[in-house]
Image 1 (cartoon, rainbow, N blue to C red):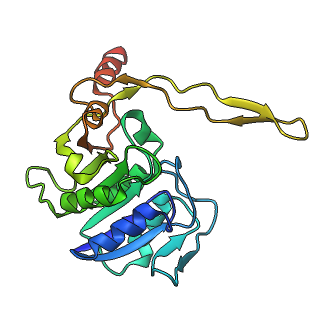
Image 2 (spheres, rainbow, N blue to C red):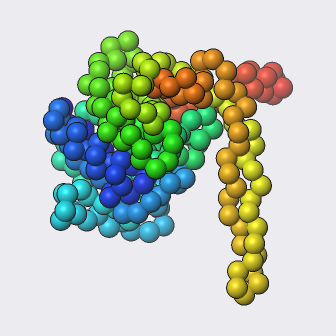
Length: 246
């Protein structure tokens, strides 16, 4: 099996280096990841600038001065001379649940692979700080090895792993996305020259963390696996709009 790995924390992040090392025991692995942290970059592509691709002397990873989507796109359309069997993104530092997936560079890297018709999985630890990373890597490797024979191919999976020792993790469960409340207010201050400066505020608290959601699962120490798709069409509104346009 050939696996392409990317992330949004950068090619030197512990999550990607540890995961890549583990997956080499079961597959041929190539890493193409951002040069630096590109968290929150979503599915953006760098259309207005050329992208450089370099290879690290330390670990052989390729790194790109662009976004996670850039990395996967360049890998699949020019850098690699083969098509991977699977694309893996992560392991991310911090959870990507509910509305987070719309902003997440980790999920975006997996989504880019899915758009090319390749099954893709995004992995995230629920809390920041890399605590219990080895446990998360064990989970990720087992999910990669699993054959999801009941899923249509290609599939796009979003996996969130609680930061717990492996023997304290409860079994993986299939979940739907929860929902967050609105984000907190932006943080406003002035720089030394008196100019207005704003920072994006904290994400909203969970609004829908009911049973069956990713929020609920990780709160109960389960690994959450959510199948995603890229069709954003609102079917209900579409039917209503068709009636209005008659």
